[in-house]
Structure formats: structure tokens, C-alpha cells
Image (cartoon, rainbow, N blue to C red):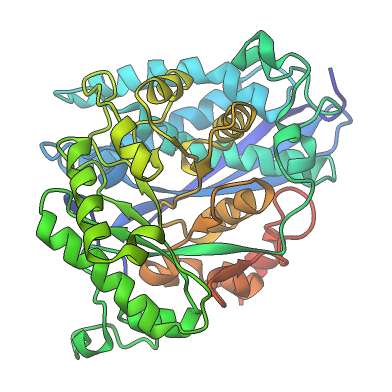
Length: 458
């Protein structure tokens, strides 16, 4: 037992429907609206001190629950229901404990909720565990934030034996005896991190494509405009995954415009993401071959491939080794459990995509296992706005991902972060292709929520 252990006293969920300034196309879907969930939790430690913490996340049903046969509104309702039930679960958790212990003790109950939701909503197929994790993630995040605040520490400093009752062997096995997540993260935030800009499937590339139908809000409406404004040198390109000629032309066009627009960049870093649309890894092998044939530098500056094939690893036992020899290939939508992690390694995937939307506690465990085993990881986005972006940016700044993080809410949902952007302007506006993290200060995750809340009152 530690005096820093906490119990949850109160949980307040708040939902809002957010609409992007321009449609975001990825894979086979277009996001036209989504629910943002903000959570506030009140916790008490063993000393009797009390504090509030905050967490946020998009309940992105189009990504986490992509079944086209079910209406988006019903999927969204199901995910909101998970939020409400997980809030109840953490309130009923009877012990003082560390946030990671609270979540990992409760995770088996999330599987029960998953099965309940499928039955209650009469879903014809399984309710995805990924959708459950996304729904639980803002609650888990808020508890970690509150833990730091009530104990007057940065939350990332609380992942050692000084604060945790259990080491990683409780979840990762005997080889992790005496090891804690704090061993695998940075001792302090990086001052700034490189940021990947998303080139969505419907995004305009050049200024010449922009017309009067585009938003007139002072923000760029083309890739060229964003590069000029933000000095971008890291770009993630969404591809179709089933149209080789289009995908080849799209990537080479992004590559060309990037080099033409940002002459100051020493080099560029690109990633490709089809969001599971490739029938097999061979599609991407062929695409890479054609990229290399057309432009050697475009091939060399391609840093990694993200989730080219469908997410069900049990059903699709694709061997990724041929593709991984050409470029690192990272598992994303497929990764929800430690079993998924091991399966991916067995099938030849190069590394993992760690997302805070899959719960902060699990992200720390994935990072610890990946680092211990020499497996690279990246930090993609869920178009995180507001507190969700502050959380993801901070997580990137305290870990060792392959190259910074992805952050694209400033492109699609800038209005969702107005309050937070006033307190953390250099996290919500990219400069020289980076996010500056110096504003993350104070206890917890450094959100400075009291200042953010005051902005909302003005």
C-alpha cells in the first residue's frame, strides 16, 4: 500500500457532437461528424487529499466500429453507453490503488460490457473491443491526471516502485519482475516534437485547387498552404489501398509539393496508411516497387507503412515479412491486447502504433514491452482535439516513438480546441513542423485545466 494510492469519488462525463471544417476521408469512410467525450474525475488519496483530473477523446465510431451495416447514430450511442458504464465501474471499485492497477483490474469487466452491448443493441456481429477501449480511454486518462494532481507530481513521475504496488510482471510475466513503466519513458518532457500532418483522401494539394466553396476562416485549404504556414516536413498520406495508379500518383504528388513548398527542410519523412483497405500485403509491396522505380528519393524518405490490411489477425494471418523488408510496417487497428501484440510479431509486423485512445494504462504497458523487446513504435492520431491532443502530445514528449506524433485536429476540428489553444497555443498551432510542449506544466498531465476553464467563462 502507498499513501499515494487513490480511489475515485466522482465522475462527470460530458458529450458534444463535433463537425469538421472539411470532411476527413480515411480508408473507405468519410468523417462528417463525431462525438467528443470529456471526463472529469474527483479522487482522494490515502492522506485524505482530494483533486480533480481531466481526460478527453473522440468516440470515433467510423474508425473503432466501422461496420457499414449499422447506423452511425446507433454505434455512437453504444460507445456513449460504454463510457457511462465504465464511469460506474470505477466509482464502484472498492480499493485505494494506483491508476494502472485500477484499470488493469477492471479491464476483464470491459469484455463483459462488450458482450452486454452487443446483446442489448442487437448487433448482428461482435461489438469491437477497440470501440470499448476508445470509450473507456477518457476515463482512464482522467484518473491518471487526477492521480498526479492529488499527489502533487507530474503523472509520468508516478510510474515507479515509489508509487506503484505492482511491477510490470503482474501483466507481462516473470521477466518483468522489478521493472516499472518509468524505466521506459523519459525523465522529463521534450521541449518540442516533430509532428505529422495528415493528407486526407479528399484534401486538396495545391493552392490552385482552392475555390470559393472552401472554408473562409483564415486557415489553409490545401496541403501547400499548410506547409507554408506550419513549416511541415513530416506527412502522413491516406491512400485508397485498392487503386494502385491513384495511390502511386497521390503519394508522388504529395512528395513533389512538399519538396517544392518547404525549401528549408533538410529532409522529409512520409508514412502511408490505407486503413486496412489492401486485400493483402502484396498490394503494398507492388506500390513500393513502383514508387522506387519512379523516384528513388520518394522511396527513401518513406519512413513506414501503417495497417495496410484488415484488422482481424486471427482471420487474416498475413505474412508481413516481405513487406517489412522494404519498409517498416506497423500494426494499428489490430492492436488491442497483448495477444494481438505477440500475434503481430509472429506474422512479421515491424512494430506497433501506440494510441492514447486505447487507454493510457495499456499504452504504458505496450511501450514498456516494445522498448524491452527492441520493437519500434509510433504515435498516430485519432484527430485528437482539446484535452485529448494535450494528452497525446505529452505522451509523445515523454516516450521514444519512431518520429514524434501525428496531430491533425488543427486541420479538421480547430473550433473544438478554442479554450485549450489559448492556454497552449504552440501545441495547437504547429511551428517549423513541430509541436512545442513547454506549456505542459504543473501537476498531473500539465493540462492547466483551471486556466482552460477560466477561458470558457470569458
